[in-house]
Image 1 (spheres, rainbow, N blue to C red):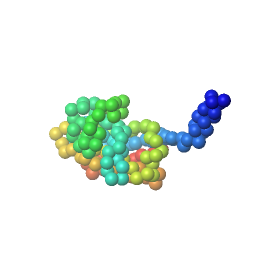
Image 2: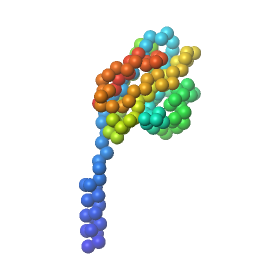
Image 3: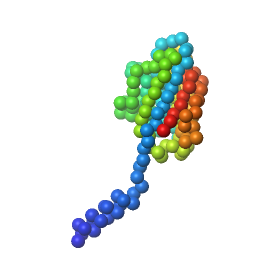
Image 4: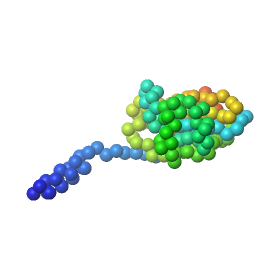
Length: 156
């Protein structure tokens, strides 16, 4: 009898718990023609107060340059486990970086922001090159950056 009651409780808990959903989010970052080497980018999430929450993508393989992505570096502490597998090559001028990833629905329309920090060797670093709220309304809208980013969009 105990076993049956325990089994029924587990089944009920499973059925009544709220499921966690995620969706594919595509982030597209087009760079300007700035006349320099490949850019390092950190794309990450912050809460409404601008506090770091999660790394989404890091473009550029040499971690010794990550300190130049200052907003992301400060927030993430550059914990390798945090972004391991979420990185790729740097992005050259005029090119576009497109990344698709799973993002929990709890981040969407909940006050979170997408941020992009950029840095280019022997050129200026741009903390908060792009800052946009992660909302359903913002899907597909182009956002100009303040530094090397010509346009940033997201879709789901």
